[in-house]
Image 1 (cartoon, rainbow, N blue to C red):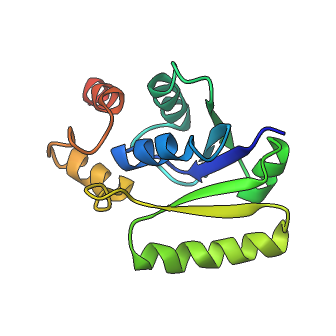
Image 2: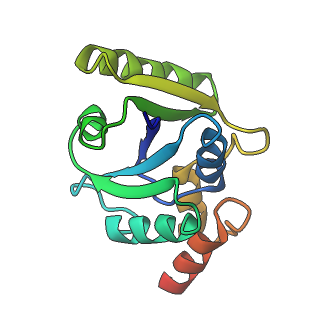
Length: 158
């Protein structure tokens, strides 16, 4: 049986910390599906389609990584794509508290889906999409925070 993990988030934008987590998780799972959660009520830096396109470009050479948008609960998406694993990244203890609460509720909703936490790699724990968006929107340099594909896209869009 193929071990498929879902790595869900807004990914607005996809950062080097996200990239590192996906690459490191490939030693644990046969396949990783990057699930872009859609919330049309929120206005992001990038559209959902743009996020899907640029993340797909980043992993174009890796057949073990897929990118999809989804609506609804993450555990429902896991069921749709036949994944029994959720992948989450942790930067600090605040992330742990938040993610642990979500994982506990997910276990109630879908006891067959297990959440795996990976700690952020040293030197990447300070990166968050929120901070990257803020730096970018104020004209700061994000070249050491996002993959080159994301940087090129955002610079072209600006």
